[in-house]
Length: 479
Image (cartoon, rainbow, N blue to C red; front, side, top):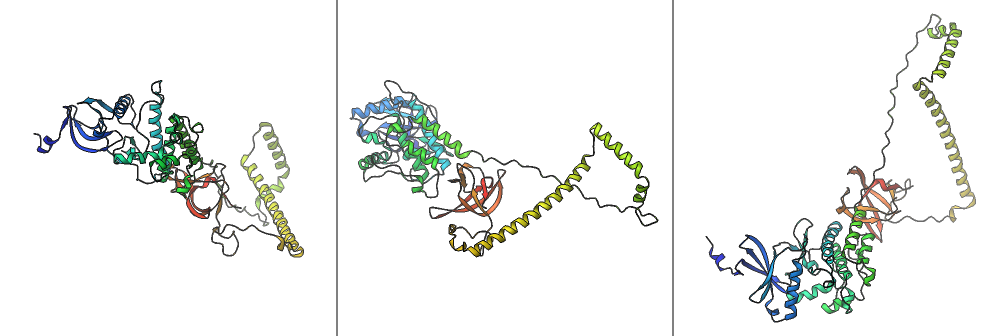
């Protein structure tokens, strides 16, 4: 039995029961509805009433609807039906619910790259359908964080947003307008790459990089204002590789950008691999287990007080010598010998040699120290030495008065070392890349995560103390 409320809801085109109006896009009014024939939720996009008499807008609506029906991608709304009824164009698409990314704030670098990659892949699909009639490919909604709905775990939908009043839409899109468009040139494939670069900056920082007092001044600002580095908006982020990607995507000259959205997808994939490569573990060399020490057994004593075995050996010395000679000759001929006895003999000799060498080194080191000290005191060299002071944030060196720590390390990897919010190889924990040679101080650890030892460290950069976790495998103790 149909409820009284349901009977009050209008049915369009004899099939779609309209529940409520969601808002207005550039060209259409969007309604939430139900397909009575297939019993599924849908969205109805009807040309806005004030545009009925505008023939150019009407043709634009019909062309965009026809092109939307020709492409299929998880990021883009699936088109179910389109046409005209009572001289009013309409478009029926899948229903979608989600939260716009506009105003959501900064995402993690991993989330931002994931979202930007999805959108760029959808745009690349549309651009692949280029033809003489469609030099830029099939239609897709304009790039804007207000047009991106978060519908799942890092899954988005690119829609023609209905969340702003129609009069505010030009101001929103002006933040993504490529410089060549503001200069009056024709749009290019690289024009949408510029918008995608602006979007990636916004997703990472939570801010749009180019602003103006009104839509026109914002659009013109792209002609003179470059996109700043990420660290200017989020000082804790130091990712030169991401900065380089955004800088190339938003280059003022279109010929210096990625040529199309597919090239941007490839660049994001390469960057993702660079940021998420697993830290290599050093080989573990097994430590030899020491042999158990067997206490010697005292030999039996003879009547004269000497060990019985020693008396017997003196009596049988000629026979023993001949037997030992035969044994040595037999081992030499057959190639067999007592390996354990050989190792014990050589170990004893090596130990004596090492003790003698260490004693000599101590003597040389002591003599050298005495000589240098005497030279400094006698010749007045100490006053001429100017030592480079350590950074103020570092503790005193080991052995000096006031020292509070003995563990300082140096980043020892040419491409820099990832600083993470938590121990582990999860790419979402990456805060920044610390340059090679940076001196850090141990705060905590080591902690094992993903079979890798991690240290919590602290260091100074641009006058700011920064803390995070680093892989111990790429930290060298400071000498």
